[in-house]
Each structure stands twice: as structure tokens, then as C-alpha cells.
Image 1: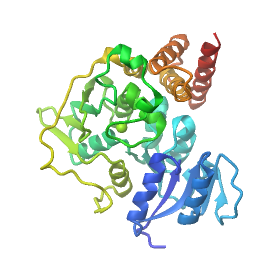
Image 2: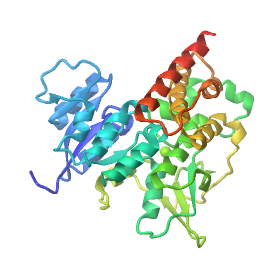
Image 3: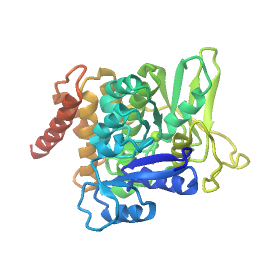
Length: 375
Ligand code: MG
């Protein structure tokens, strides 16, 4: 095989980021070859992807009953397989944690979309990456923007401005927020994403997770990261240097661009499938200050990130269960924060936790939310 062809494993290939990753790979098909695909319950889609891309390896958490010529492996085996050059981690929640560790320990480059992994275990993940002399490339649009702005810079940024669209309810009053429907919460104004992250964007939980993610990725204190409301989602983030100079990355809001950048780095390639910004159409760029008290999930996330230990794992797990309950019509939109807060309050955190302790905190949080619901 041509050595210039990069061999890719996509973990979570049936999710929103996984599908868009395969879309980028199709558009730039002379550069990449898909070696492994992993999926969850969407068996039909995984089957179609396996037929289209013909990976050597696949993993499915649900049963796959067809002869695809592809061999079944665990996610860890796929992530660390000698044939793989780059692992795209597009799983959700804690699911990708062990496979990401396996990839880093095998010296693979990891393109990371699954932010909970850094939120839960940022210290362990970054330590393993530097120990094995490998890199974590961000796929999250804000973090890709920061990464692009820092490229070629010798000095560390003094401050990071993480932009946030504010979600669909930024102008809602407190009473309006409690009556928000699932359908309203799933209608994000600028980004097309999976359900869980769309709800997290509406509660601004997502932005809190992103502050923690940026802290670990760029080794910058959480208090040097400022959230700036930018409803147009054109500036994907900015960095400020010690001399007062600011750099920003602007592009049409489409996740395929940060995915492509992470796959192709250090190259930039033309992809005619990607929409472009028309600067003549943009009259002005709008910013607003964040109103923290309106979005308690954001405050909870920032506090959990500052406290560290196993609090961030509880934040992620309780948040995931609470969002699931909201999507199933069992709790109101504002109950999401109430549930997460209660779980965090009841939790006894462990400092400098191991992976096992982090995963145990995740299980504890899920049970805690179940107990709270029964009460
Ligand atoms: Mg983001």
C-alpha cells in the first residue's frame, strides 16, 4: 500500500461526527483508507458503512448478522492495531475512554471529538499522550480554532476566548426556560449535531465541558478561559497573547472542516463539499456577555472542573442520564440542572483518581440519579 495513504479507524462511525468523518474521507479518498469502524445500536447504518468502506476490522455493541468480510475486534484492539495510523474518537460519554487510552499507549495519533474523555480523565489522557510521544488533535470546533490560532506561535496564549452561540434559548426568561419542549431544545440555531450535544448546547453544559476540555488540551488555567456569546457561530474561538494581539479562526459552521483539519494536519486541502463564508454577506460580527445565572449547568460544569477529582465524571454521567430523561419527556428542561447539582452535592470526590475510580464514579452517579428519581 502507498505509504502516503493514512490508515484510519473511526470509533463511533454511526454518530453525527462519525458520519461526517466518513464524508470527509470520501471527499479526500486518495489520502485515506478506512481500516476499522465501530458502532453502537444503529446496526443498519454500520452495515452499510462496512459494505461501502470495506474496513479490515469492525466492532458493534449490537449483534451484526451478515458476512461482511470484516473481522470483529474490540474497540481497544482496533484503536491500538499496528495497521492503524490515526484513530478518530467520535464515541460519546465514557465509552471512548479505554479505547483512547489504548490508542495513545500504542503511539497512535488521536483525533478527539468525544470531549467527555478529557473532562473525566484529562490528567491521565494528557499524561499518556506525552509519555508515548503522541498527539491529541481536537475535532471540537472551538478547540480546532484555538489549535489553528496557536499554530506557529512560540509563546503560550495569555487568554482564550471560547465562543458560544448561546443556543436557542439565550434570550429566554427563567419561566420560559422551564416550559421548553424537546422539539424546541433540539432546534439549534447554527449547528447540526447529535441529540445529546444539542441539548447540552441549549443548557450551555456543553460550553462548561469545553472550558475543561480546553484547559487540558492547551495546558491553560480554567480561569484564563473566557466564554463569549457569539450567536452567529462564525468566529469559532480566539486567543489573546501577552502583547494584546488577538487571533481568531473564522469559517462557515460545518463540523466537516475541523474534522478535515484534524485528519490532514499539517496540510490544508481543498474540499469543494465544504460551504464557505461569504464575507460580503456578513455585515457585522455580534458578541454578548454571558449571563451565568440563567444557565446553572454551565456554573455546575465550571465548578466541577475547578474542583477536579471525580466531580467531572459525576457531572458527565449525571448530565447524560438527565438529558436522556428530558428527551424521553420525563423531566423538564430546567430539571436537568437540578438533577446534576444534586448528584454533585451527594458525591464524595476522590483526588487524582485512577481510570477505575473514574469509571466507578460514573456508575455511582447513574445510580444516584436513579435513586433521586425514585424519591
Ligand atoms: Mg464545540
